[in-house]
Length: 82
Image (cartoon, rainbow, N blue to C red):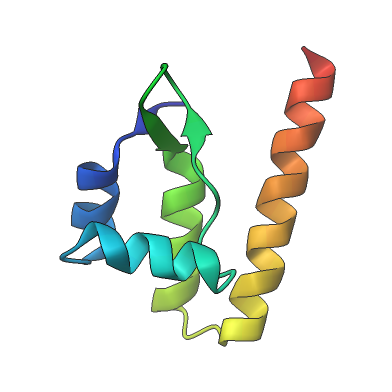
């Protein structure tokens, strides 16, 4: 699993600005970032790919919000296993 910085996420998803990603997070349509340093964050690549696949598949915003919840739950499970 790789952790992608925001520029890679934007390129993968086709967004042009950082604000577009953060607006999606605010609306529950994108996962929250994970800290990777004192002043830097990133997103697991599998989460970004899952969100892009959902968009491509034509999932509704409500379905994508459910996906985001599942991805956050998966993160929590991985943390407990460590």
